Length: 309
Image 1: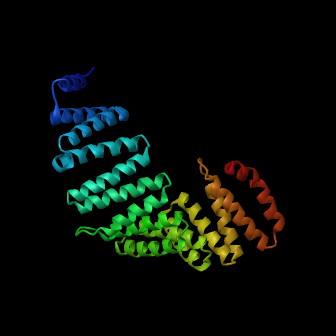
Image 2: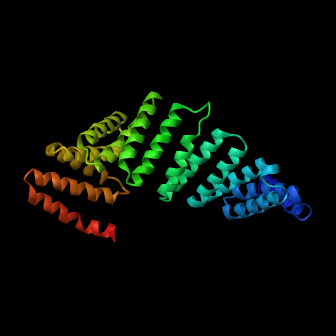
Image 3: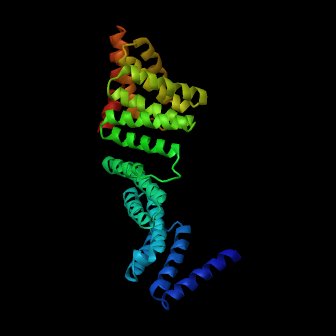
């Protein structure tokens, strides 16, 4: 055992010894310090127990009116534990509580960041409405240091939540606002993501020309960035957009290449692979190659049935 580890063990034992002789906020401080030790050992369950016990003490001693900073610190600890435990719904709830506390602390920027974090966490567990509500609440807060890029990302996140709620028309409006802001912020990467999601939304709305416009920009970016993985999805969007525009030869070309790229992935996205095959079959049928289209549909039938089960 190294001298450093031995010193840490001695310090931890000293803290546990203090538990029996301390009370009130002193006890809460000791529990907080012990929670840091548990966290560094990746013992997130023990860390949560220590943090909760410390929080209970602070609330009994006067709560947020007296110990706002201390309680916020402990809630941040809970968030980190929940995130490491993949308990994203509980992390989202903690972020919402922290947003209220940051409001009490007159820190509007930090309040907005907590609302954004809550929105992202709710999105992970497919609570689309809660995700949207938190991102809208974050967007509604204004503060002097807010950047154009931050406003752009807010609009992008709102659009993504709206799309999950099948509200594609409003999603398009948010994406377009996001694209303008990200372009103003000179951030090609996020302009690209806006184009990606705009292409998807316009495809859902069966608006071929607009879908094609944004899918082309998405495709252009991935070629310049030489991102082969992204190219598979870009060609999928572009091929489907051409299909909507009844440009079947172009649709076939992009969809066929999309499959070539996406099926190379070790962790295959079977849902998209099946969908691309279906779109490709539509293009082939329109090109008077119905037999070839049917053969393709027959080949993916087992996979489609399996992932739908």
